[in-house]
Each structure stands twice: as structure tokens, then as C-alpha cells.
Length: 303
Image (cartoon, rainbow, N blue to C red; front, side, top):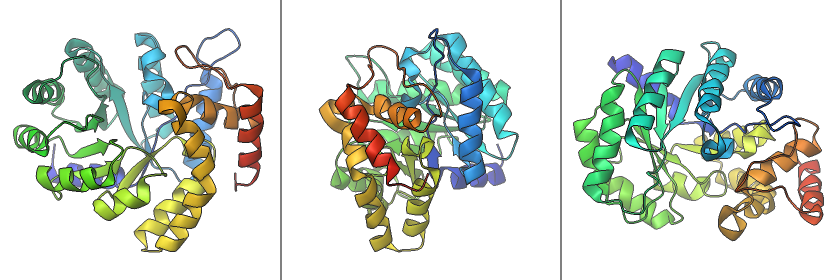
């Protein structure tokens, strides 16, 4: 991978990193037509970084074939004009195979989901991510960090071993910890992406994040892109006005340890007639009172 390639990929992460939902048809299968329409809607609005198989896409509820299809479909819609960051994970062989599939499909980066294991050591965390990064040296690699106990030194070591680890999606609910972790790991070595979306983007921006993930962008692309522009231009009061606008929506998603995270986004899309509200277990659709609240919130946005 050339330095120019690194530069382009780093720029793609310093942006709104959209996490597309996976719409389902009435029979429970993935609705490819609705998926394409939602992707085109974001692309037409100006979104330039897409992450198929993220948590908002119900990564852990999809089959291997569905995950592969999501990558192929997204790369096809991106048509070379948009950076595709593919979510990969599970045990090492599956994560490595998915990373290679992403490369072969034409994606430019992979985002490595947090290891799903009851016992994660610092060295084991390094080894897990190194296995993926070494398997696809052509791709940029982005660890997804949700573990507040991980030391910045572990990421620094991973970066030393793997030059293609170029960005970090940091999703620990603590802005001070993020700022310290980024500096311990190497603030300039990595592109820092606020992995807790718009609600944390302003605080994490102040700590060094230059991009943020978004599920909201499925519903209201202009709102997410507007916050990005305000932060880039130093218009923090404007960014916080957007923050206040979307705060009730994002708090519904975060409630009860994010139990309804995806359900709220899909309910908003259903209220706009863009896809069905269906989600797969262990998620569930919203009760009627929350459905009404989501629809009311969306009516107040520029969608």
C-alpha cells in the first residue's frame, strides 16, 4: 500500500462514517432493493464513507452469506466514488476470511469488531488484530475499541507491528479516557473516529477525533453532515445546536445499554416509508408509545 493510498484512506475516516442498516423483507430475508435505495439516498446526500456489517447493520444477527452479500452490494453502489470500510469479526479464521473477501470485493478498509470473548488480554488483543491486519496488507485496518481497560500502549504496539492499522473507532463512554488513550497510543499516528456517534462527537472532537460514526445518517444525512461541517469549521455553537436537536433520538438509542439502538433507527426509517421496522433477535421492534415518539422526533428534522 502506497503512502498516497494511506493518505486517501485516512481522509475517508476523518468524516461521517456511515453505518448502514440492513433492511429485511416481510419473509425475514435481507431486502436488497431497499438496501440499495437506502445506500443511494446517503450517497446522493454526500456521504462518502460506508461501513457495511457494522453494529447498526446487525452484524451479529447476519449469516456469513448475508454479510458477504452486504459487502458486494455496498461496493457496487459505491461505484468507486465512496470508501467502503467492511466490518469483520468473530473468531480469528472467520475474521481473516471476511477481510480477504472484503479485499477481493473491492473494499478499501476493514473495521475489526471488538473480540467477542469473555477473556481478553492486552497481548491477545494485539495478536487478534495483527492476524487480520497481516492477512490484508493492501487494506487499511481500523480496530473498534469498546474495552475501557485496554491500554494505549497496546494500540501503539499494534501500530508499530502493522503499518496498515491507520485508524481507530473508539467507543468507550468517557471523553477524558479517550483523550488520554489517544495520546498514550499516538495522537498523530492514527485517525481517531468517535465510535459513539453524534452524541459524543463534539466532546471527542475536542480530544482529537476528526471523524465520527453514525446510524442517524441513515435517516437524516444532512443533519449528520451538517454537524461534521460545523465541527470542521470551528462552529461549535452550531454543532451543539444540532446536538440538542438529535439528543432525544440518540438517548432513545442509548437507553438500557443500547437495547433499542437499531430498532430506533429502523423505526425512523419506517415512519418515512423507507424500509420495514423489522429487526432480528436479540433486538426487537419498539412498543407503540416509542414508535410514536420516534416518528414525532423525525418530523422536526430536515430529511
